[in-house]
Amino acid sequence: MEQLENRKAGREAKESDEEEKRVHDSSVDYKGRVPLRSSTGVWKASLFIITIEFSERLCNFGITANVISYLTKVIHQDLKTAAKSVNYWAGVTTMMPLFGGFLADAYTGRFSMVLLSSLVYLLGLSLLTMSQFIPSLKPCDVGGCEKARKIHEVAFFLAMYSISLGTGGHKPCLQSFGADQFDDDHAEERKKKLSFFNWWNIALCCGLFLGVTVIVYIEDNVSWGVAILILTITMAVTVATFYLGKPYYRYRLPEGSGLTPMLQVLVAAIRKRKLPSPSNPALLYEVPSYKIQGRLLGHTDRLTKRQKIAEEDIDVLDGEKNVELPMSVFWLAPQFLILGLGDGFTLVGLQEFFYDQVPDSMRSLGMAFFLSVLGAGNFLSSFLITAVDHITEKDGKGWIGKDLNSSRLDKFYWLLAAINSVNIFAYVFFARRYTYKNVQRRVAATNLNKDDGMELMP
Image (cartoon, rainbow, N blue to C red; front, side, top):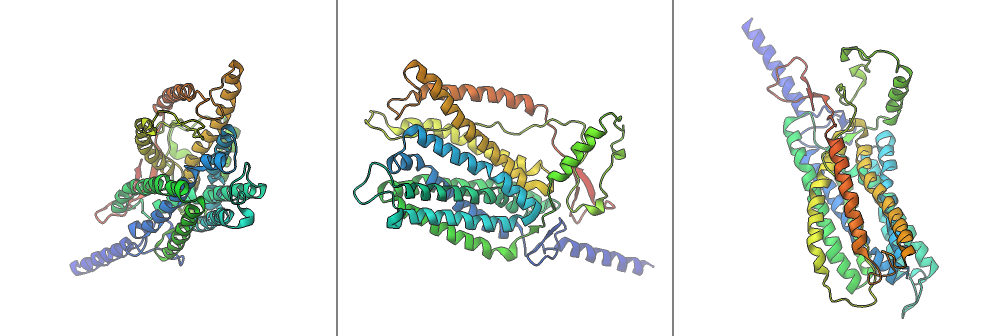
């Protein structure tokens, strides 16, 4: 009898070890099988993903950091038109992820969306490169001109909005795809995922730093054509590298539109609004657990939200100066250092919040919500510039003139500071009323003695 029990215990221990070797979080490997923990996911997969994020940030900031100068010096737009052009483009760029995130969660899956959008991004960079080297697409003939050719302007904005379209699928899916490489139900991998967002932002900041220093230096002192060619080659190499990591990734299959059940709940709530709420949450209807691949949200009696971080929106206008001023650009360094430190804390918290606080089937869309907040800020910034210019011009001297010498940006910055002060109070008001979601999570651990391994975790 004792020998039989020992055999049974040994068989159960062996089965437990086999289960531990597999990842049971509804993900699959590139062949559609339950992935092996030892050969997929974690850092061996996420490093491929972080690499392409570095490349994308290098390209993005290498272009956007100097784009107003390009619009004013090469295409010869005035400062107000250039600022609005950039804000419209930035707004579209940060709103497009809403569509890309929805399509990825509902239909294509994150890997396919990242790969497709990266190719579109690369197409935009290639068109931008051609507009600098093909004679018929160049801004003007050798020797300069007072206004760029219309064909060059069309090619330039077509390339820029192709990059926006590529960003729409790239940004919301890449980061959530990277976080998918860590199993939330495995204690060790869950700890590793906590540092993933930090390393992600380190790669982001490295790409940003090289973009606004090395690439901008090449644009100003060598040529825009050489700089864009470098960015195009870099993106092409990292897209190929990302594809080579295909055998190491863990994939989440699309589960259909995540908005459909939300609308169903809303309709049901309206139809049953006059019925009394049950005192016991267990009496509420739930889809049977065997039909759910992901994790179930726990019940809560509070519907308001709290965010971990306050948000800041500051747009900096940079234009061509007609007269040199006895002022160094380094006077702006302390202010931007403070803004950079604030972004460092803000962005990491925002990314973790939007990834963690949405249902598992909507995580790409969650990251898209994070980006769309920034996009809405860009559109509001364009509206604010237009409104401020219209109001202040009535007094004879507008705050935003044709160049920095004829502007009063100090007053405009005071206005932005006042808006951010109001934003802080709004953040505190909503933050104090938010309740974090809790989920039913199956914890994979060898020392777990519960019957089904289920526990409720925030």
